[in-house]
View 1 (spheres, rainbow, N blue to C red):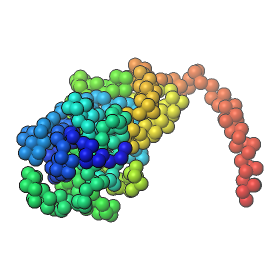
View 2: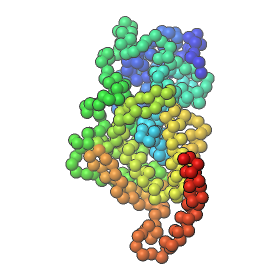
View 3: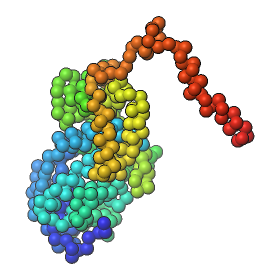
View 4: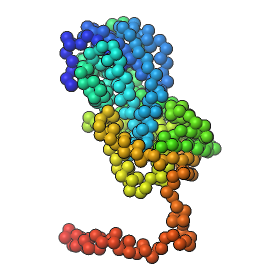
Length: 408
């Protein structure tokens, strides 16, 4: 969708945090488009102080400010379905930022429709993934809405320009030019990127972290957890039934205390740029590990392998902002069908930066001690394996020697 022309826009709903970028955007958009601005802030567990945000938005020029508590919906309807799918981007990233954007944008569209707005705006830059995630959701849910993406259209080139503009226009912000990195937080994780972290050889500082202790500062005594699952969703922690958001919150605290869930990676952005990110995902790391382990005893081999293949596709869809697509919903239907048998309890050991599964049980377990045993048993005739191996090796026996002769 092309950028909206100034004369086409009368009312804009802006995804607003009250920080430097969105404060400047609010003022700039109102002045540039001569439009009414409605600010909208989604609380998805970022733990930021939201008190006074309404007053700040109105002081900057907004006519209204919506502050929406989406924490329960975020974990229940976005994080948990993704964990059921075992989605991990490029084998390491648990998609903490990616999975939040569809919900934020969905609610933004709903507010725009309620308010009769003709446009929505975001503060994502033209280099990152978030612009795609926001706009794909806008287009999927209401393609008639115009999109305002200031970082792709205005003349500002960086933080210093924004600070100067805010000062000149008397915009109430607290910011300085010194910014060692960018941080994004929600109920699932915290990400750190940009600034000093743009050099992949630059080692991060320990005081950067909020959710996790370093492994060497973690307790010298291990802690053991029991997580109960029903249809692939965690429903209880150490015997206590908990709603998804509360359960994840508890796991973040427990895992963080033991230094679980830190990663430092270079990932491939959708726009083609390699980007270094440092992430803290203690609760999500524990949940993903425990869930995958429970699947190991409850899913049939070929079904598990098929799900593993499709989980890679699912992860790319989430990373690329394609949550509201028929493809993702079809994959979700497949995933949820597989999860009907994923019921049981997993025991996890937390110690010095690691989370290890040490036991699991399920009423739907396919594990057979009799078949797996190396002791004498009557269920499995080991002699039968010879015929199986000969058939399995048929291609190798008939083709590999000829192939090696041809390539010499």
